[in-house]
Length: 250
Image (cartoon, rainbow, N blue to C red; front, side):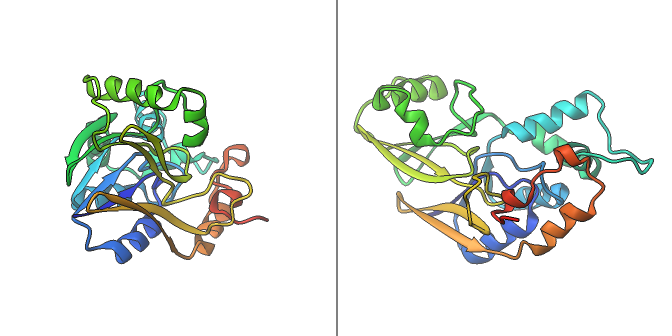
């Protein structure tokens, strides 16, 4: 079975279409959250996920958009400047918001004998942009995985089973093997880089084929996205993703 594992789409329809053009024979799509915000096509991205065979969890940006809607934030109609959150709210349809509300924070499933736990970031609630490697170094690695597995599933783990903890959020693609049957993976970001030294200009993701993980990358044009950042009437201090978020140094 071929499983496409993606995360952090951030309303970038060009990115997800580029990935799908290359991997459209996937049997299953897993998404680790942040479907919207920071991008120009939130409705198109949500529609894409609704139309494909996807298993998704919510990301912090998905929650932030829903919280902003609940607080009454709107897209300005008087020509005043706006931020990406307001832009996103103004371009989502009611059915898009219903779909975002339906997303759970975590999921568990078994694929090809691999037990999988999916969450946007670890259950301690730390939303800092730490790599998985840094996160694991903060703890005794297998003990941390045991605690995380039990918190997410409600069941104490049995060592040396084939178990995978999946996270997104950091925008950095990683496959780690802490031991005792665990793998901890992050597909990176389909949409944007967040490392100041990044030179990537495309989409990162993972494939799981017959239970084995491999990293993948596909390029797509970003120049028109950069132009949109400059053209839109964004509030300057929250004008993200900036050029560095696209992996382009200016």
